[in-house]
Amino acid sequence: MGSSARALLIFLASVVVTAAPAAAQQCRDDTVWLRGDWGMARFHVDVADSAEERSRGLMFVEKMPATAGMLFVYGHASQTAFWMKNTLIPLDMIFADDKGQVVKVHSNAVPHDETPIPSGSPAQYVLEINGGLARQLGIDVGSEMMHPAIRGAAWPCK
Image 1 (tube, rainbow, N blue to C red):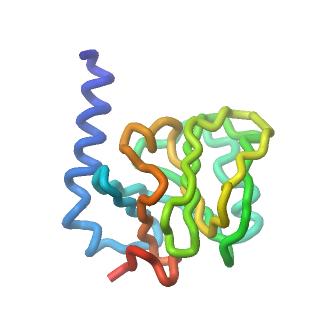
Image 2: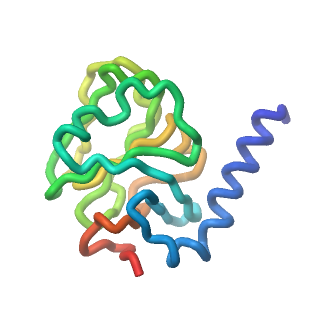
């Protein structure tokens, strides 16, 4: 196993294993937690909750730490679509309903591609993280998101 693969495995193990006890204590605006049968993960996020912030998203970002992302927050759940115009890095898009339950994961969206990526089901929250990371962690439909913006959440802040 190469050193980069070994480093990735260590990172993934630390994200999933060390997250469990801290999740209940750290419901913060700059943090999104995800959990599922696969385990648990935490991402440091910027929140895009205005039309202007959502329209800019992660455009022009040249690189992003593996534990970082952006959470898009909408006023209500509806069909939505994203594109990658002016986005420089591949991204995973994790679409979640009004309760923070993941309804779709789109892996490795292609930089600069203007093809719409639809939510498929009504979504109120979209978490963008580095491309390929959702699959590596096991994040999939049915996983749950925790963040203070998610009202009436399946996995509520304590």
